[in-house]
Image 1 (cartoon, rainbow, N blue to C red):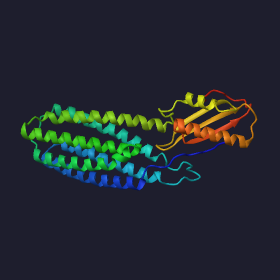
Image 2: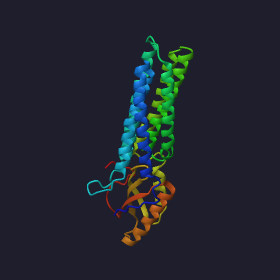
Image 3: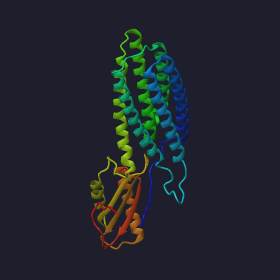
Image 4: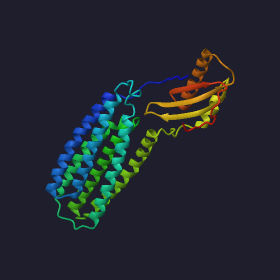
Length: 306
């Protein structure tokens, strides 16, 4: 017998998230176009690199926006979970793209160390990097609140934060080129930003991969759940346990439970309610599916790969 039970309520505001993402997309399109034109006019490779990074931001923000729209779609008979994982997929794609962009920036920065530096119109570089800082800074502020509780929004937030930092690097490079003509500083700052991109991107990539692979959340210990359930009267054995995270809001528990007596269905419902309260309040699990058994011959191990 299965039972599905959810506690709590939604804390996200999809409409507000979507609006903030749209604003960020428009701001980044403006920055990208301005930096491409400015990079071609000034001869600045760093500005063109920052434009490439901004363009990747536009794509990642569009992916995030589409994911928020899909996540709101209702479940159906052929999509029983709906599109609840759309935002996790978006987080995976965006974090992977962060690492790819970082590798491209590292390649460009290393090459720049060994190239003769052309004369660059540093004033254009300075003003356009300031535009990037202001626009990306505004986008970062718009997404920061939702980034704390939503993996998809965090991936978009990290794209914008790292791009703001990249614009700071371009600004510093522009100032150094203007006053000291030390062109190698630009490449050094680009390397620093790229390694930071890999650092934050890998962490999010690992987290989203765990969710997509149905791994048990890091905050939950299966053996402790089994021990807690064994303390409930009439429960003889807990086995065939599966715990996974569907999205940011839902953690599911599925298990087979042996009872020491042939209990009635009404008694099982009362025990099931105790199980739900126990796992929710102690472990944060808000969806429970239990298969009751009595003297059934099957594998009694806690973890069984079906």
